[in-house]
Length: 514
Image (cartoon, rainbow, N blue to C red):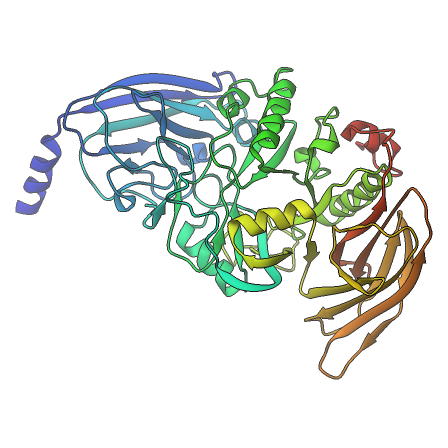
């Protein structure tokens, strides 16, 4: 009883305590904003959130300080809902920027995650109730490690070291370019997500939350690259290596479902291009999340997911469509490289209905050839297309052009040249099928095995002097299930006749909206 009295007494010694209510429903505004006064001397902002269980994942919370900087953003999803901002990463929830709590008027708001409202809420309406105080308590999902953020949602070059070398050796590094944690609609903490990635043998990890960005990360051996998944009702796009929150994110959330969203997406792509962030279209043909920005100029895009969460029920078919589509992009002379992403939202032992395997981080894996693993080198290698995508195996291409080593993504400059294309496939227990894909045409290659369990392919070819040629490798099981994709090497130039997503989709055999 004495303890309870002391606890109650502690709760009563706050300088500030406000209760704020927000309405959730399909007819409510996508962005709702209110204001609170933070008194002088406040060192901590604590938020206690009450909402019906069925309203989880329906909205994200954000706070803007008197200097107009966003100091906190997080989806109200999995786990405990008592976030906070303090002076250190230990008392600041993921998505927050620790530091001085400035006195004055703070904006507090919610952004509706329209996708979830449309899918799951139906005609229901309800309230999210926030109790905001200066009471210092244990916060949910603390960053606990390094803070990347500075002055709001900006990645500090002092705190995030782009040239930090995680491994000095040149070679193929394994990672995942599409992941989720409790910052948005994932179920994993950043700590457990990191552990899963390390156990899966990953070297790098890119957290890509829905319209939200991480402001720091826990201690890990992984090279963690800041990212974001720009999420709209017309499609999703990942940005890798971001240095700040994209300017139009709140406008995208506010106007989702309106025609103006096309303009905001174009502006976001333009900003990302100007900043040097990598632009990647996610799951372009996956059911309700397919890419519907028909006028997207693919010359402004770096990458596209050819394999996204292969354990999802509609995954295999939509992934094969993405592979066929990307071949057409290359046939137009546009260099967009294929990447993979697990898009894992689940706990490690959770399966989608009908799936034989869990949705796991690192499935698929994207392999990047780096001259030493660092965030900077990783970004440069992705831009150059030094990429392979695999399931259950590792592929090591060994390409020689006139005796000189060549990597996927490289341009061949010789007018007439001899190519030796070898690849080792490691980690499989059954012999796969392998195909050399030349300008979209498939040629099956013989596969040999060695005593140590490696499978090998090798072919020799001579490229004549033509205007545009590209060659890639694809590996599948005997049942035609995807195992591996090695990005093309290419030669020459071609002026594309079709440059937009919609134009090329229309020219791609078998790709329809049905």
